[in-house]
Length: 392
Image 1 (cartoon, one colour):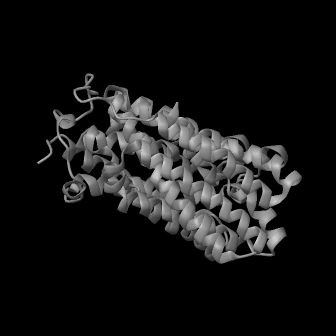
Image 2: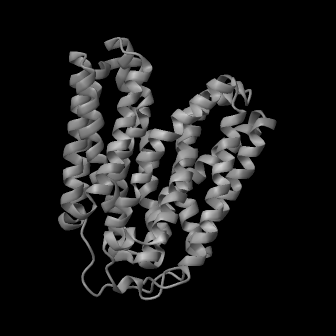
């Protein structure tokens, strides 16, 4: 529950789109200027998780999550101050850089801690934690949409900071690693004897297994986050959705994002990580290929299933890393893998927007996504072959 609460609070960053219009009205900034704060925050998240992985391992989950709560709340306070003083640099540095560092400090440690406690249910354990991150946008957006009309941007940011800080700190104080010798039967998909050793990050980065998984993780995020950026206009222009159906796209995406994190990762405990990843990628290829020829409810359902696969990748990857390198090594190695999130956040949405604008339609962006997913499926099959061998 502590891991879920921490991720639920930190996942509120995904509700940033709710603030874009009110901030623009107050400060007079354009939407791209405001959206860049979100991009900086996600990039800062991935880079902090990657380069701070060893530090977080030394600090342990308790101190890492407490620091995360302080930094993320400081980022929210900075966002409120930036709106009050109409300072874009403060918004980028405060919310984007500092708040993003808090996200990076708090994302991996809860996942790694759960993997240590539940090595026999790795998919379910990681799915529970990151499901909270996916659901954070849904909860935060509902709260913010009620606070913003009554309090305005400045007070809303201050209020959220005051609520999230104690919740994240208390969640962090609850977390601890299991005692030495705690070792339930490992999952069938785990590499034999993997949990008995500690693999340094430098050793993991020297393996083809890590970079194949990193590349698959990147592909799944880049395609999914591109779709999230284009979802509402695509649903209207290509899928023919309007009215209440169109309004339901964004909140329903958040629900399927969270559900996919729990559902796909739980399935992987039974059929294995490689088979689950391959199924996710194959389903997305089929759905993306079908998008230009379907409309209405079928289009809506296709979008939701794709986003469930996007969410599933965030739960599947740390469990896969635990299988390959052992539960004790997951935290810092997964932190390094989260650099894929930064790369995808910077490349996916801009590429999709460019292709749509250049072509005057969604076809090229959709088929480019399908092509990337095919490459990802090939990489998963290569990874599965290498995974059958023991770590050198």
